[in-house]
Structure formats: structure tokens, C-alpha cells
Image 1 (cartoon, rainbow, N blue to C red):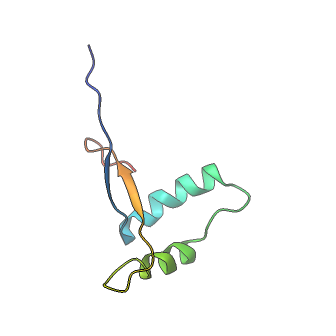
Image 2: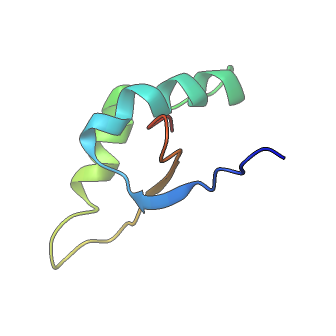
Amino acid sequence: MSAVTTAVLREMRWWDIEPVLELEHALFPDDAWSPGMFWSELAHARGPGATRHYVVAEDPVTGRI
């Protein structure tokens, strides 16, 4: 019997942009967000006046998004 790894949901941070961009381009090749779009969105996701909330699903064993 093999073990099942459960993804962990956590707040998206700036260091997640590169791996998320890889997924973005694979899933939405014709209209993928640019790095600048992600940076802009994350800038609005921090602090008491945050207007956005982004999460990533991370494999706790490999750290892969």
C-alpha cells in the first residue's frame, strides 16, 4: 500500500511566482498572466487593507506547487 500525500494550502508569497507562472503558461497558454500581474496582485494581498487573497497548494514532501 502506498502513502497518500495531501497538499497543504498556504498563502501565496513572492517566491511562489516562478512556479505558479509555469503552471499559468501550461494551463492558459494564450492569455497567461505576466510576472508583473502576479507582483501587482500580491502587493494588494498584504496588510490590513488587503483586497485580495491568494493561496497555493504545496506538496509537503517535495515543496512543489
